[in-house]
Picture 1: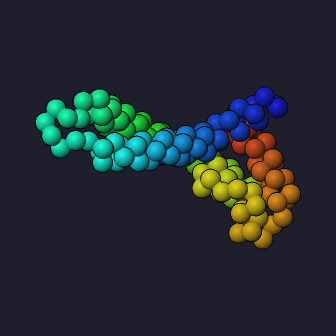
Picture 2: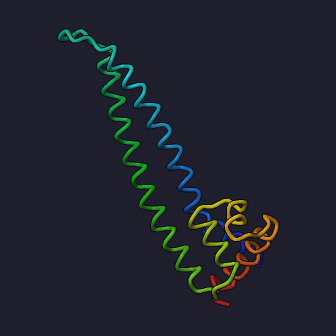
Picture 3: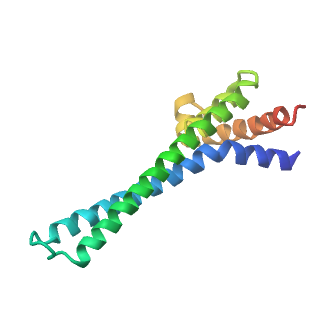
Length: 143
């Protein structure tokens, strides 16, 4: 049973992990954009006067484009994963456990924020999360 609970937790965590990767990719994109802006300001207006900086700028633009495409692919994958998580959780009877699982794994809220919204302690939110994971594992296994 513990293995399936861990498997369910990994499955439920996919949107969260993708969200983290999207954030990291967007941070890299912003860093490269700043670098591109700096490189642009250093380009010479004279024909052929930019040399290596022009090549660097071209490489930056290509890399930014690749990362933007990757971020978009991850956003679509995250949306699909969140829909799959929602589908699994929709098979559970409506309860506080389901609310906590939805808020944490689909809405990507921290336990502290869930507790504040539902007026529960963090410890109780964690307990509801653990119980919800066990119930989700049983549904996932078809028990």
